[in-house]
Image (tube, rainbow, N blue to C red):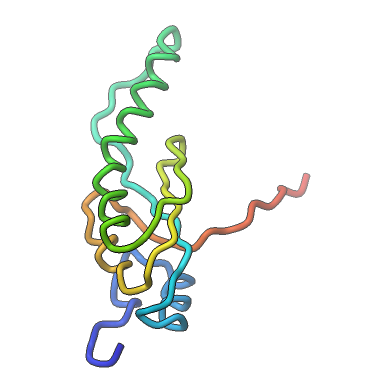
Length: 121
């Protein structure tokens, strides 16, 4: 990656992911979680319309996620999971394509997958 900007130059990339990208080099493949921006101006949900509200949230997520998914796939990556409820995509991508994905307007952040941990009670 000589002569190019480092991955740490991009504000939306987590420090953990930047370290993995630097270690893997441009030809490496990395697992990422792409966090999408929250919806703008979404009307409050009436409790009686819960099913409709959930359907609207899913549709809104898909509309925002679709161009990001296309960017991931067209750059040689693959989508490995989606979560509409927390507005994330999980993908396996070539390291060199991460800056292209981050450029998408709908992308809030890109980080590495983290294992779930139980809360201490």
